[in-house]
Image (tube, rainbow, N blue to C red; front, side, top):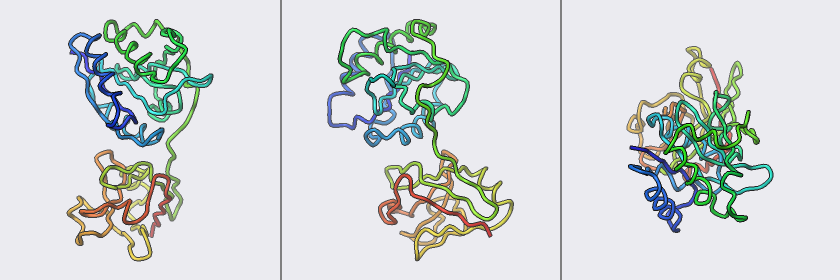
Length: 261
C-alpha cells in the first residue's frame, strides 16, 4: 500500500481536494490518500511548516507527502521533491521546506522542467505534484529523473527563542483551532534555561503565570489562562474551556517574555 498525504491551504469550499484525490486514486496502484490539513491560513508558510514537522514525520518509510501552501512558479521558485528519512515531500521551494528540515541532511530534486507541458501553473499540484507522486510511487529511485539541488533556493527559518540570564524572549509561532498559542521554545530547553529557578509570565494586566499545568483541567478556574506543554513539546498558552487567542488578543508573531526569578 502506498500512502500519500495532503497538507494545503485550500480550505473545504472548492473542488481542489476532490480533483487531486481522483487523479491520485486513478494513477497510483493501492494508494491511500490521507488528508492531514486543508485549513492552514492562506499563504502562511510558518504555520504550514509547523504542521508538517509535527504530523508528517510520524508516517512510515516510503510515504509521499504533497504540501501545497503559497505555491506558484516564478524564477525564484521551483517545484521539488525532498527525500528525508526515506519519506518524500513534494512542495515548492518557497521557504517552507527550509523551515521544515532546518539544516537536516536531505536530498533535493527539482522537477519543474520535467512536466512542463503547460505554460500555466495555476494549480501546480495537478500539473506537477501529482505526477511526481505517481513517478515516485512506481519507483522510489525516480527522484533521479529531475535535477539535483545542493540546497534550497529560498532559505527561511522559524524564529528561535532568545535566552538571557534572567529572561526568555519567545513568540507565538502557531495557533490551533482551539485558540491555543504555541511558543517557539520546547519544554527541555525551557527547563534547562530555568535551572531550577522560578518564572513569571505576564499574560496581561490581570494574569501572571508562575507554573506549568499538567493538563488543561489542571487550571483551577475555568476561563483563566494557563501555561502547559503541548504534544509537540512546545510551551503552550491556553484557557481552560475557552479560546486563549481570542480572549487575550494573541496572534502568530506576538511577543512573550518569561522572566526568570
